[in-house]
Length: 260
Image (cartoon, rainbow, N blue to C red; front, side, top):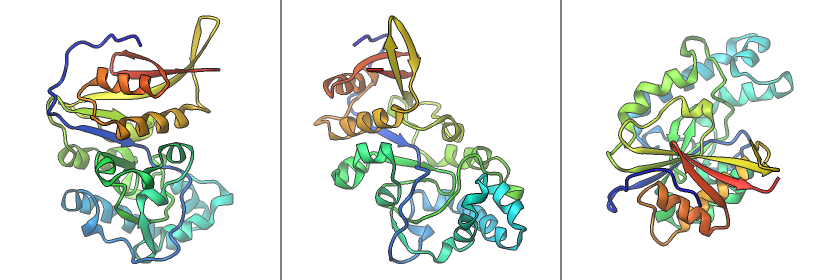
């Protein structure tokens, strides 16, 4: 493990794991609709959430081609427009089970302890952020969407998230998000450590896309299952190394080097 970050954080500081949403989701089979008053940061983010739900309901009166364009989906996904116009009444389930895909398969949120899940926030174009145990419906809205008066999703959320999310001096935020979601919020006081994946062959290193989600899921799981939460970037890297990764730290990044 190669460490190139100086300075240690207080052992009493918190760690936060920031996850991306998944494009693939599992629709809850039943359950009460979403209750905005029960979601993470309910008061701080309610107006932004309500605005997006209103905008999605407005898609019902649009020509299909225009609605598809605003959601940034393909014509083959046209059925998602109808889903998004009725989210307030749709059945909701825990975010830990609604979000699926490679990262979430490797992470296994539902099987982690409640204490471990409490250290996780999931970024969302629709909700801003949610906790794993928050109940949400199946929906289709990515950070690439542009809904009428809403404009760019990252810009819609930036001010509200800056006011709502924890950003304590010396705390550690381990970031698994893609760039589109990272653009909505970055801490100003906490230490931000973004996780990347690279392959190396013949002395040459290159980013890997096909394995990046799996790597992030496995690193997140290792951090959340650790007996002692990492107090700093070096601690996070040591946990990832103990989980079997070759890692390097540099300029706010934890780089996992995997076999090509």
